[in-house]
Image 1 (cartoon, rainbow, N blue to C red):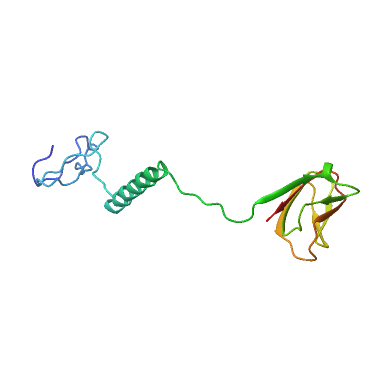
Image 2: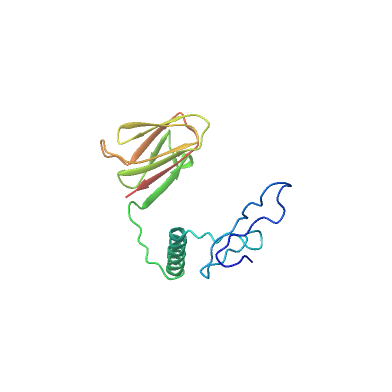
Length: 155
């Protein structure tokens, strides 16, 4: 430990040179302790520590809220019917009601053309399509080019 008000000097200077000052910092009592692995510089980023504490508080509050019962509400369309190629007759899949919204998953290795409400929709192989569909209202989907698919009618 250095004397009060004096900076510590190195204990092993090069021969013939004046000893340099060692790494140190001033304590509140006016002394300059030497720094090292056992006594590192007292660096504190106050703003970062404050932000870290704020984040810890936020994470704790979020975790507490997630551990409680959460009210949920589904919005949007509900699946009304789902059909596959097994349900098709001569390349036409019929649903109980007119189609307003549809999802098509083309499971085939070839692109398929699905005619919905008189609108041709090309769905690439192993891909899906979902949309609200206008056109001429119909309860049928004509399929060409694909032999394996899933079609869902939503309301």
